Structure formats: structure tokens, C-alpha cells
Image 1 (spheres, helix red, strand yellow):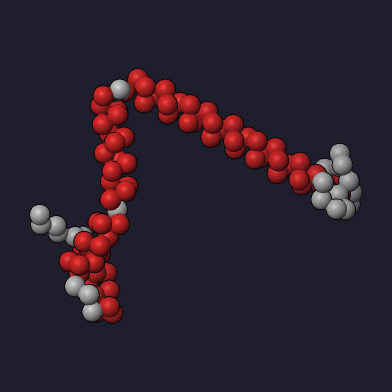
Image 2 (cartoon, helix red, strand yellow):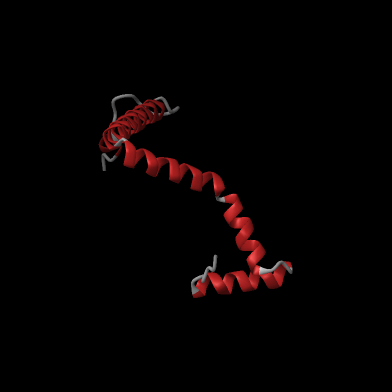
Length: 100
């Protein structure tokens, strides 16, 4: 396999090589080895999309619903915590503080 990095990546690898004494090809190999778990997940996800698109779409919808629910709950928790801060009077908004 031959890989041609972008000019920016090439310059960064050259500088890093000069600083560490490690050849750029070795650094690229180490980076790719570190990426193996992410590559495996991507492959499995793509396989699932190709084999079972309806199930994957349903799973993504459930994931999105869960994320929205969790974010909404976090917002409620934050609002509740902010209302309980010392020195803050319940039911009074910022408008009441600006009486002129």
C-alpha cells in the first residue's frame, strides 16, 4: 500500500520525525494501529446498514430519541439547580432585578 499524505500532514510528520527521531512511516503505522477499534466499528456499522437498513434506521431513531430525552432532563436538572442557588428568590426573573 502506498499512501500520499496531504502537504500539511507531510510537513507535520517531517517536523515530528525531526523532533522524535522516528521515521514518518513508523508514526503513520502507529496511528493506523491505534485506529483499529474505530475502523472495526465503522466496518460493522456499514455492514449493518447494507444488510438491515430498516433496523439500522429504527436503531438510529431510538438513539436520537434517547439523546433528546437525556438532554431535556439535563436542562431541567440545570434549571432546577439554578433556581435553588443561595440568594436567589424563587419566581423572580431577571426583569425584577432591573428596577431602574
